[in-house]
Image: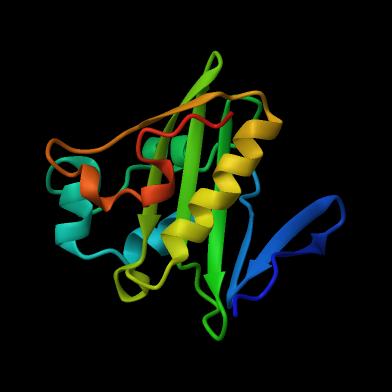
Length: 156
C-alpha cells in the first residue's frame, strides 16, 4: 500500500511533500549548488538526451538560469530517503496559461518513481498557479523519458 503524501515544514514558509521514500520541495531561488549536484550525478548519455548534445559542464549563466525561481520559473527538487544528495529536479517555465516542462533524475535513481513523484507535485503546483497545459522540452526522439503523468498533459 502506498504511503500518503505528507506536507511537512521544510523551513519557515516552505513546505515539502513526502511520498514513498521521496521528499520533494521547492528549490530556493539561486540554489546553483543543488542544480550542480543533480547535473554531476547524470551520465554523459543522460546529459546528451537532456541537452541534445555533449554537455560536460554547465556555464555560470546556465546554472543561474536553471536555478531561477520566480513567478515565471518554478523548480522542484527531490531527495530519496538515505541519500543526502538531490536525486532529481523538475521545472516549468510559464508561457501564459501553458508552461514548458523539463525533468532531470540522477542515473542511479532512474526507474524508482522519482520522476513520477516530481511530475505529480509539478502538476499540482501548476494547477494552483493557473497553468492549464504542459509543453515538454525534450531532445528529438526522446519523448519516452518524460514521466507518463506529464506526456501531453492538460493540468485542468
